[in-house]
Image (tube, helix red, strand yellow):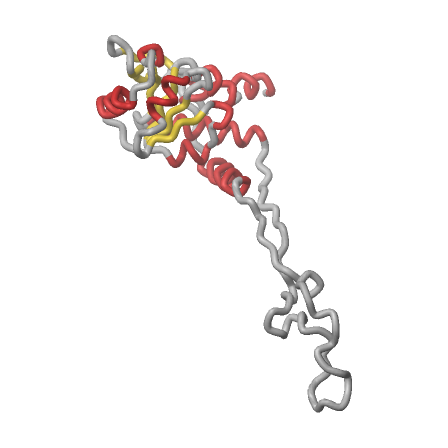
Length: 218
């Protein structure tokens, strides 16, 4: 379900205060909690390395010969000191590499991203950023901009890779995460309490949300 009117958000950093209308298909979409949950779970699982492991009795060094002869000692027969019941021996069922990936369909991922962004717009916690005002990196200017917006942190700032001044200005601020549209994830949008998107990065965010392609597929 998409809102009939395009939502408006403020533009920060400009010479004068203004608001712009955003595409309703992306920023006024229906929030579907089950899709957001599935997508966040898949993204967090994809970040897990799964590099656990243990050594079986065949991988533990040593233990090539029997610790004592087969008969005549009065003790139980033993073939190696690297058996699981020996101290320093291998594990009976050692854990190995594990893949935590969870499959989520492309349309579901895009719908989850649209819903997460729309939720920020509905709550008034999403704004655009005029990056032309940052001719050189200035952490003080970036902090003053966020304070003037009265945004609740943590804040997610989405910029293009070419906006080096913006990246350097915001990346050192406390509880501020800077990312690019190609690496924008639903889990990060949900984690953030406020989202700031540069005007240059907005077309890429729209493309990642896949609004045009979704409409074309229907």
